[in-house]
Length: 93
Image 1 (cartoon, one colour):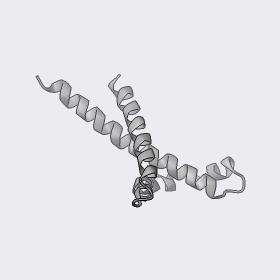
Image 2 (cartoon, one colour; image 1 turned 180 degrees about the horizontal axis):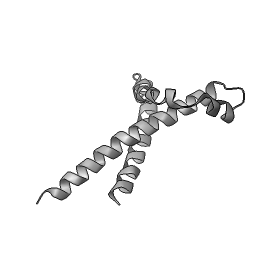
Image 3 (cartoon, one colour; image 1 turned 90 degrees about the horizontal axis):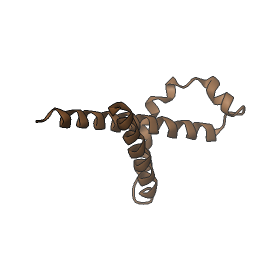
Image 4 (tube, helix red, strand yellow; image 1 turned 90 degrees about the vertical axis):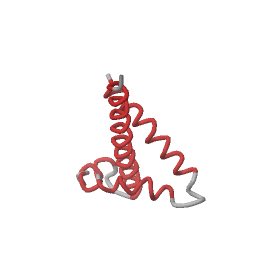
């Protein structure tokens, strides 16, 4: 049950931080900071998937996959942090 709760907290925080990054975009490059870790997952996405989503390829598919991989990265990070935090809180007397 803790895993599902941590995953949902991770998704909520990842999307919230993404919205905050887009809101802060006029002030500094917050979107670039948010999207940069997602580039680690882009080489894992097969090119056939890109052409299946849009036969012409195109920048729209690339941006969508970049945003989805960024949300995936931040979800894992925040979900793991929440899981560790809850586990430590339960162990304390």
